[in-house]
Amino acid sequence: MSANLVEDYEKRINSVINFIETGISKPIQLRDLANAANFSPYHFHRIFKAFTGETPNDFIWRLRLEKAANSLKFATDKTITEIALEFGFDSSSSFSKKFKAHFGISPKEFKLKNDDLNLALHKSERYHIPVPVPEISVKYYEKIDVLYAANRRGYNDEEIGKAWGELVKYAQKYHLFRKNTRFFGISFDNPEFTDLDKCRYYACITNPGVVLPENELGKYSIGAGKYASFDFFDTADKIALYYDFIYREWFPGNGWYPANKPAFDIYLNDPDNDPEGRLKMRINIPVESKEL
Image (cartoon, rainbow, N blue to C red):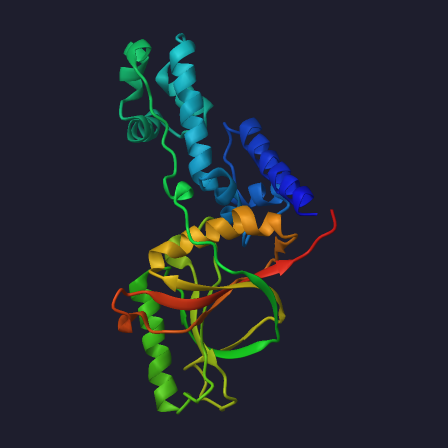
């Protein structure tokens, strides 16, 4: 089954690339790409990046720039503005800015002396960085009731830290810390679809069943179901490498698809107490099986 599933993933990614190719001059919505691949919007961007080494957005703009460069080289009767508009840029100035940032030379310079140029493509280095293969198992979790402090101001350390500070403040005020208290993080939004400064994160602890005043801590339930679960113990900047591995290799190689709901993390240490600032947590990614 795993061989068929790998082929299925590849086929879906290829269908997305074909979708991009045929609509390269038009505005492309990332949700439309997820629909073309028949993958959950929650997980599509990670699957695409794991298989191609690029985010969908990076892939689209690179393809536009490469096609535009080809047109600059061979369609000598076209102006730079005509080529920019043909490949989805809203103006020649925005095209020139992106072209120079990508290739290190302006479209005008390239058009004048492209025979002498060798443009180096930009590839994701992170995609090729190996990571220790984690031990992954599929676990069934019952529903987990939590109390949370919300951060709706983006995925950045400062704002997430504020959410944890608020959670701890009320947990101490209402004596919510118990012997079996567990700590969770839930990231709800996909930054490929949602502006980064609007992405939502919940800092959570298990709900001991205490009645609290309204408007201080929220209540939420992590949904019951099967999750691909593995332990992570490293610095936070390495987390994305593990996600790339899971989506590129583990999912298609083990007969699972990501389910359409958010992942959650169980925190097992305080990285401030680790001499190397490493974070220890259990990452849980929702899964479902599908008949091919």
